[in-house]
Structure formats: C-alpha cells, structure tokens
Length: 279
Ligand code: PAF
Image (tube, rainbow, N blue to C red; front, top):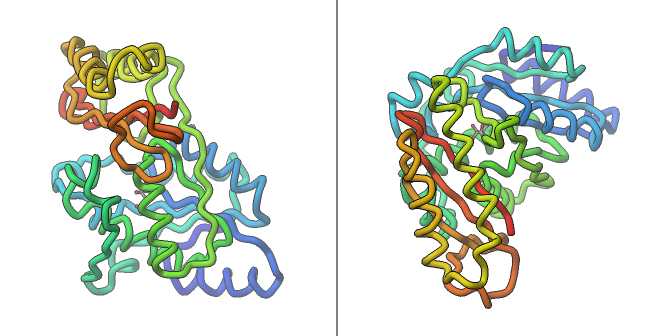
C-alpha cells in the first residue's frame, strides 16, 4: 500500500492511474477505522480498480471543540488495518495540507441541512461539504463510498455532487453493527464498558418500530422510541425523527408513499451516537 501525506504526490499518482484508464474508488474517513470502514473498502475493491482511503480528522465539521479534541486518532493502527485489506493507497494529510488557507465557502444545502443533524450541529454539514469537495478534487474518484449510519450526510454529499457537477457516483453502504447491535462508530471506543453495553438498547428499540405501525401514529411512535430509550439510565435522547428515505421530509402520516427512515441521536454519557433504521 502506498501512503501519502501530500496532495502533490497523490495528484501525480491519480494522473498516472487516469492515464491507464483505471477506475478509482474512494473511501473518505476520519480514521479510528472499524469494521464499518473496512466494509466500505471491501465494497470499493469489488467495484473499482484502485482504492484510495483518506484519513483526516476534519476540523471544520466539528461544531464542538471538545468533540474535536477527544476524537480518536489511531493512524498507525489504521494503516495496518488497511494493509491487511490490501488497500492500494492511504492519504493522511495534515490540516495545513488540506487547508493552506481557511475555507470560507458557504454551501447552501437548502432543506436538507435544516433537519436532524443539520439543525443540531450548526456548520457541521458546511464543513463536510468543504472537506469532501477538497478531497474529491484531489482524488477525482469514479465512485465514493459512504456508510448509511450517517444517512443525512449521504443526502448532503449527493446534493453537493449535483451542485458542483462532480462526475462521481455516491455509493451508500449498509450499517455495520457490533454483535450487540450497536452501530459501529469511531466514537464507540470512547464509551466505557457500561455505556457501550447499554448503548445496544438504541438499536434494540429501533428494531421494534415496524411492529407499531400503523396502529400508533407517527408522533406516538416517535414518543415511544424516545421513552423506550430514555428508560435506560445510561442513555438520553437528543432527537428522534422519521423522514422520507429519498427527500428527508418529515413523515406526518403513514399513508405517505415511499420508504421511511427512523433516525436518532442519543447521548451515552458524554458521547453522542447516531443510528437509524429503514422501513
Ligand atoms: O463520515 C465521516 O467520517 C466524515 O464526515 C467524512 C465524510 C470523512 C468527512 O470528513
């Protein structure tokens, strides 16, 4: 596996690969890699000739400085994991390399950034747009792979691709879960044993949702999820939302057509976890 820290080195390699008509699969990450990321790499390997993984903790998408400070950083271990998967290229730039000057661009993702994560984490998706567009400009992938745990992020990135006319296919990949059902996340390593065990209750609850439909109204189902999770003394719900799978519009009535997604953000102690289920 080739490891690069600078844009120029990676740009030269990508130029060469493009000259050889190789397809490029890209998996952007913030490191602290887990099975979820590895499944994205596996999928990228199936679909593309060359796989590039970036490892970059992007400061512009953190609305809470404490969250940025404690975000796990495990570069050596990450590179080792990628080597075992036979990944082709890892890109681990410094902050100065990605942002030689502050990025002042303001994206307008319209409705998509007004709900759920967008409403609770001001500036978060703008920062995601900034970094992902910079990485896309460097890597110039044919396909980019994202995990569905960050369901709203995928919608935002698809919208950015549309607005900036990137010829890139966004490939959503299924959530990978721990044995307990807890969605894999780099933040899980920050949970102590007790919180990690109890955080499994989030998915246990989401799995029961479809049994409640259509007897309970949308509002009652959201309340039920909130109460059920909050009953666990280690967990505290920040929000529960049920949205249309394609538009992210808030579902008001079960008679509305289309697939739906129940999305939650939950604090397990100080650690904020998100999860969702499609039904
Ligand atoms: O999903 C993530 O890990 C990040 O938001 C991403 C897409 C790597 C951008 O920093």
